[in-house]
Image (tube, rainbow, N blue to C red):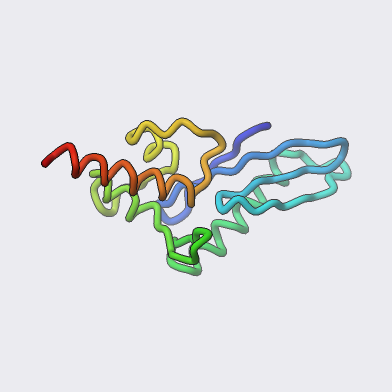
Length: 127
């Protein structure tokens, strides 16, 4: 499995992809799957097209994503919760590293839950 990354409007997006015969399977940040028959196309370029479409869709929703409970998740907001300054470009990888989240590939909804656990544990430790 390979990983691809792009940044759009200061938000970092990453996805994984794999090639099965001539079929590309891309897992997007929201855990959805996109498939393409390559017919000679570059797997990385085709995967990037899917990731760009995902990022474009998200940017029309002002950089937010939906988790399984239909609550919006913003990478910027997650970053702020763990001390990354507002307005700074932030990636899922950076957030994961800061809170010690090691599961890969990183799924945004799972990362959001891990941030909440991290913040709650930090508050308990501060008391």
